[in-house]
Length: 252
Image (cartoon, rainbow, N blue to C red):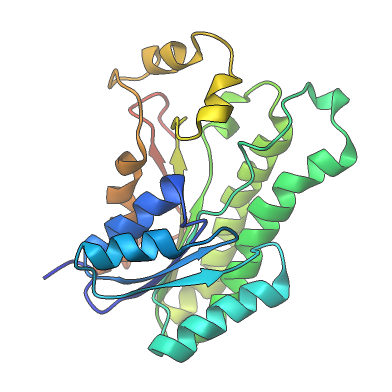
């Protein structure tokens, strides 16, 4: 038996990268997984099915669009009758223009907020009715160590990820009466996009590793354990918190 048997989980941005790892990890623990993404999610659905997962569906979604987010929640609820877990993983980061803050255009400033903040809010809003009716649920939001570091040339992105921490705490207050737990997970830099990695300053990876207690590169699978824990019954009395998964590069 898995720790998430009979649970239904939605992972936004689940079709690739770190989101794919969340989907596979939740499925290994017995969850039925809705792989929700703007990109084609069906390769990850096939991976879950091939590995013996109990069930998976692919859902196309634009998390920044209210109608699309609510259609996603409605499709999952109609198919499975419940939504136990939402992982708000979809994000705008690797596409972000890296510039000093006073050289950013307004539309470039707005983009990470549209996906990272508005998207997380809309998806949480979309699943809330089902979770309230169940009197139970788990919402897991994803922040970033750039908030702690104050990473240069990414002030628009890190500001959006700082807002995620505030969103989590506000949602935890509003949803706690319904036994819905809302928490944040904060990863450090995880190389998973070759084009983005190639644009970074030489030696960046080594500098990031050097500041960690655990001296190695962080990989997507490092994030899975805490997400599985927050999705399960063992964390039912934990809400409004921020969990750093960063190899000890900072203690939040």
